Length: 213
Image (cartoon, rainbow, N blue to C red; front, side, top):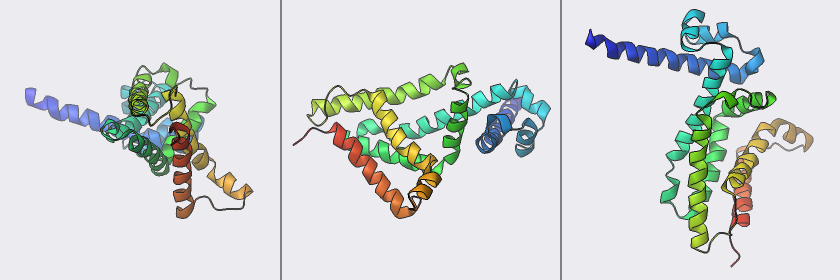
């Protein structure tokens, strides 16, 4: 009997993983209102009864999707080991990572768009999302302090405001790329345009942070 527990546990973990992956795809594509539990069950190779075994209802599942989305990006950021870098290079790395992550994970942006339509009512139910994000702000604060101590960065910079600016510079450009390209008659999705955008964002942030001289 003891030998059966590990395979059963692995099977449960795999089922949960498949449901969460399918739900992420469905919610990102259809939004919260448009997503269908039946479709999620089908995509995950499961059924509605099994899905409701792991998640009480659609809202509970969406909260889990959002928690996983935030945990995934924060875990990837932690792999950068930003505190091992020189302060200026740490900021460069964070900007570049954020930009690349948003490009390669458009589902993350779509999930954020959906949740903002609901005034964050789902993620407010989460006990974990705040913890995931606070670690990043603590790391960024330490980088800023190091930069100030080395006479590189200006003082009085709020790490939360700085991160919002870094994220916003990437987020707005990518989430509005189609409309921006159309109204300004310029394709802002080309590889060249993306390279220019990353350089522009890096110049803006470091230009604000760094002391003259």
